[in-house]
Image (cartoon, rainbow, N blue to C red; front, side, top):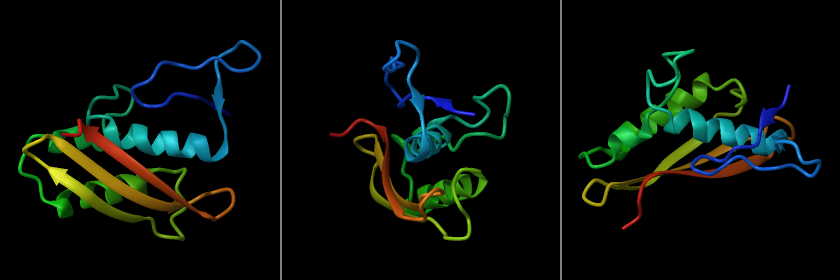
Length: 126
């Protein structure tokens, strides 16, 4: 089964045939990770345990280690991320005064085992 191509914060896209665009392979995995991390806990009515809620850290005095722990826990629950090669997570910016959180993630592509770099942002840059 394919996912609909939908980047967080953007409209749906039209595919080459005029239907909704579909996400394949690495694009689908990246979109699933971003969706999981930015969805608020208890915000997905069909699965109340789904979602990392990174936006909850915006505007609060959050430690980088707390954000990293949430991201790692959510990556462990994401079936699209291979767990035999542990993902690497680092929080490059946590700026509560400006309301901005950035988590840099490197995980293994489930199709090629090649590393994939993904940066997930919550809030607005200063």
